[in-house]
Image (cartoon, rainbow, N blue to C red; front, side, top):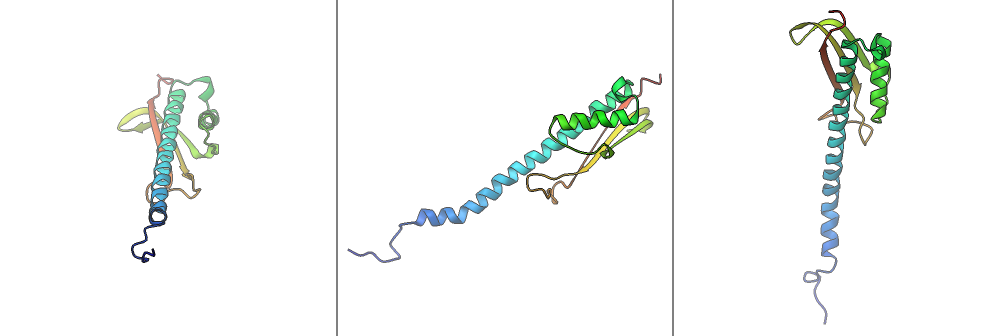
Length: 138
């Protein structure tokens, strides 16, 4: 007994999957990319906070700008993010958030996620900064 092509449902699931799969994969990879971007920003924020604290207390690891930058790079590399020391800027005895005599650490670097091109609509550059009161000059 023959059925017409209109009534034959063989392979319908395959066709439906072929239509939905690209959207599903784009959604999954979008979630992964966004999570990686947030994680990268969090690592950068934690690094500048730790470096600002190290600079503020005049720790032996951060008692010069070059050492402080290297301290920052080492912390980022421990998390798997490689960048040059030039990405970090150290400012000593500055006004930060309306408070005087603060030490500030700033990092700025281009974000390159899973795709290698970043997220131009969400995040293409990571910017983080942290301030700590300079207790070494007190």
